[in-house]
Image (cartoon, rainbow, N blue to C red; front, side):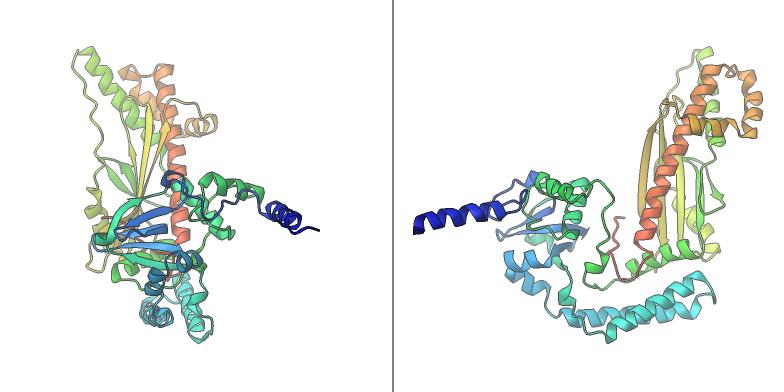
Length: 416
């Protein structure tokens, strides 16, 4: 075979063997099409990964080790200097903290069992031979003064990147997110599914006292003392049970009472103004004081924001942790919105089955609100509130599960 024909044949075979959907490494993808966070430095370099924390002094990014080593060797060397020494320091710090907590944890409690298992795990890691350099990712800490521009990836795209890293796809940092999505689907992976947990692939990192206190608050709530509060923007009460399910009948009551006030105002030709509910965290001090009385470290608050028009159900949920200085900080919050006018047969039936509702309707019948359309409106709003609360509750359980598996990862950050 002639050399030219042989080269053409070789090129054709290599083209056929190249995986479909995999972008060429040198292809430039616009920042708007990336699946990762992009941090442009004033030096002209670009760090690509997932931002996990930012404040006035530093930005912390998780970056794939192989990509960083090849693309930015100088930053890689700085980020990985003395990795094994840092790992030993982190393990020693965690062991000391665990010993202190085990001394005060109740005997035979779920909390003590978990703390002991973590102590055993960390002890085993200290005697192990595996180097931290085998972890898939690297922590990169950047000074805000060194950064020219930051482009954050949308949450759904970053979730796509996590899936791609989990599947060990190539060039995750530089490929078009559509390209990654196609390859994942070829592997029968639905990229919209909850992202896999890559905690075990992160190197250890030191925690300050505030982050440690937040982790203990989550453990205390999950395994020992679930302190819950629920209510509206202006009224908050202690609730019982771990589920913290909103009493939809009370919500229906509040909405119908608001409608009654509106109905009476209209009869008197008064101007009605429906101001936005107070969504500030005025509850934090009072809820924190009550939790302090029980020596709890964490508390959850569920608030329903009710407007008299009943068109939108809003549920806000927050989790607060007691800091080392005894103050309380919200370390997680979430909001769910639902259409308050849409039918939800199953939830509406649950509300109608409540014996308190009949008594409520009898009480309000004198106001003229016993008409079926007004009752239906209130019940639908109550059902929408229940649905929103259940969705928020699911998100909270995901949050607790994420941070109650181990005490040295994943990173736990929040904004004041």
